[in-house]
Length: 116
Ligand code: HEC
Image 1: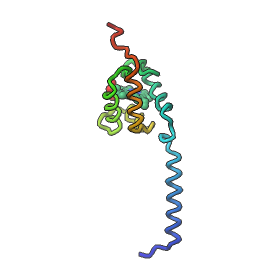
Image 2 (image 1 turned 180 degrees about the vertical axis):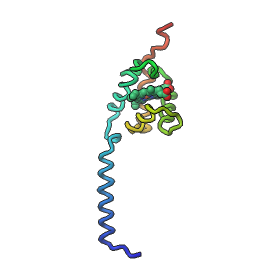
Image 3 (image 1 turned 135 degrees about the horizontal axis):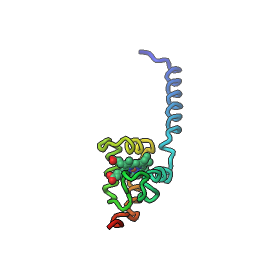
Image 4 (image 1 turned 120 degrees about the horizontal axis):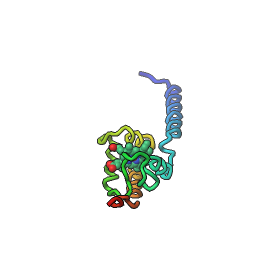
């Protein structure tokens, strides 16, 4: 098959523009770590200790590796929950985000023990 050189370069040009357009438009990649952290706060509370709905889990004071594991499991689909699977995807959580967020919430003071 003979490919006209002009079409080859036209196709290459258009596909690079296309790729550039989509990489610039991906909202997840343009979000800063702080914006992602704020998104978590909407449901889990700023410190991860005041969930908006009582049945939402408290993240504050949870083991860091447990949080990393849970977030990785939502990301890979090993753990299924419509809200959290969507959050991880929409916010485009990277491995580094997951590690930072987990460290952040694990260091917060847990409410565990207050009721005792
Ligand atoms: C729209 C509300 C909402 C937002 C936003 C949200 N979460 Fe969640 N999160 C939930 C709910 C509901 C659950 C319980 C899911 C389940 O039962 O698996 C949960 C569960 C979790 C768990 C598992 C906790 C456990 O005890 O097993 C972690 C970790 C977590 N969220 C972290 C985050 C982080 C980090 C963010 C921000 C990137 C975030 N969440 C944003 C609602 C939310």
